[in-house]
Length: 454
Ligand code: NAD
Image 1 (cartoon, rainbow, N blue to C red):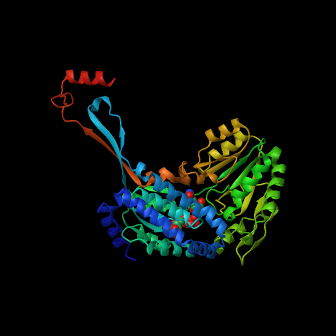
Image 2 (cartoon, rainbow, N blue to C red):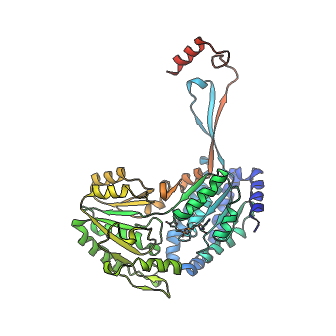
Image 3 (tube, protein in one colour):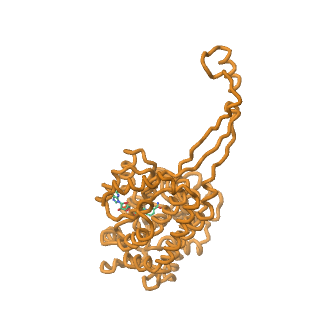
């Protein structure tokens, strides 16, 4: 494909100003909703082919968020796009001062494979709402899902406005040579650096939604039954292949035994199996082999079975883990849950402060002091108190990482902002003028300025 031509065509279309009309944006969002609804069965079958994800899981973890984003954008685009008046300051009286949100232009959205629809279409909604033209590049690893997205978008929208392209790293190397007005990337920290570097060559603004090792604290005074239920749900959803899944648990030594019993009981109760619509395959052989290599048999306290033919890995709990274990050296991104016990929360906080900032953090506690201590001492993208993952579903909460886990955020108005520039205008009246700032300068003028600015 001629990427240069595609980008030029999108820029020419953007420059016609058509995408800036609020009516046009809302019309396109409604059309997107309609074509997704019409093609839902294609989405279900594609993602099932990729990793045996059920219709239930696909709706509740992918489509529900996209439909919600579309509805929120349709209801709010007009208000988000309004010019906002702000006060003048003394020096600039008399003047009107206002901020005009404007679309950045031609944007490129690059997605990860683990939630192939949501991770491409949610930013897509934000980009349309903000008035951009968009090119989407879904992950080639969820190839059926990528094809389904391409079919749906490319058959229903003109390429000079919205286009899905397919390919892997080699195609991306070509794509990234082009000058975009916005790059929105979801994926690993390693590739995030490649994207950032490519963006720097053109000074293109970026949003980077990356990964990392997200901890979950289980303190001595938590509600153990609910903790186990919500932790197990968040960890084994999508077989642990979730960027904001609790990567590992830090449990207070005094409640560790009780906690282990509670989570094993919960895992058994959930009956995780693909045929039960609540479990999926590992995406490919490479990731399967990587995860199996992390299964230290001497530390398995529950689970551990795997099958390379079906790329199935049983929900697995590993006990007596320390920060030095191999499983603690990389993001797990699979159904393995290491447990580290602690006795002094201050020691754990010190350890975590020296590690890369994670995308999420979860705290299970009934103690407001511990909650406050963790929230104030650790930097991370976002998270939950007494739950996991679910903060992603509230569009009033900007979603994103910090440091190694990303830069920028989206969902709801934050998404609109990610694809907008806020143009600040000082609109000066003509009926008033003083000579104080103009040459020739004088001591008297300077004294005036000093008086007025102190
Ligand atoms: P990845 O970084 O391997 O790939 C992401 C995208 O980058 C894909 O579309 C891929 O084709 C493209 N890509 C790969 N190599 C490239 C290169 N050299 N140049 C340009 N583009 C390239 O990530 P993945 O395996 O698809 O996803 C897993 C990672 O994504 C995990 O670290 C996970 O935590 C993270 N993730 C983050 C979020 C979030 O919202 N922050 C969501 C999902 C996944």
